[in-house]
Image (cartoon, rainbow, N blue to C red; front, top):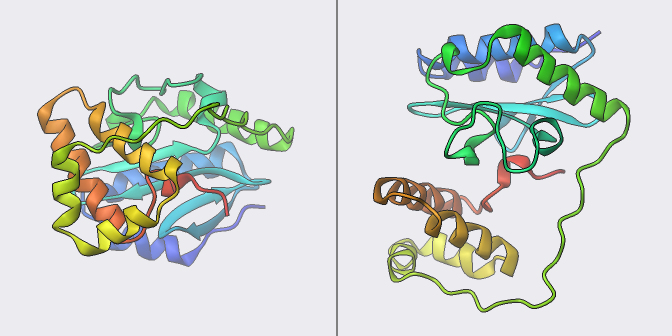
Length: 204
């Protein structure tokens, strides 16, 4: 029998009006697909557990996110279920309405697949480490933004090489100026809170 966490009830209640039906929809389908799922609170966001992390959801000012811990094994490396250009916020991109998510049965299928992977003890493949560490080049606009925020700068300076690289690559690989600006703003906000690029998906 699955469990529900009252902290998630409160989280949904405090979310923006547009986000409530999205979060409730995701929550309902996760429980329908995996009756033994357990809800918990990690890294300030709702997570669903079943023999390990299954998936997580979050709401922001203008959008929601939903992602699977082992998304690469469900959808394939570098691919999200919705083919979003920016999959940094989970495999389904920025969700602003329930209609942005796959149809119920398809999404339930993804959730069941995630549960099966955990039940089988299948782990994500280890990332290959580069033989040589290339010098990390910070764009002037990135450094200028960091210098305007002492907390973000201190966090960045204390990061490991890989954490620094993740932020730099995420920002510099943006295809458009607006996307790059938004990513930079998000990066500074996260680093102000001491968070690495992939903080939502870190295992505890």
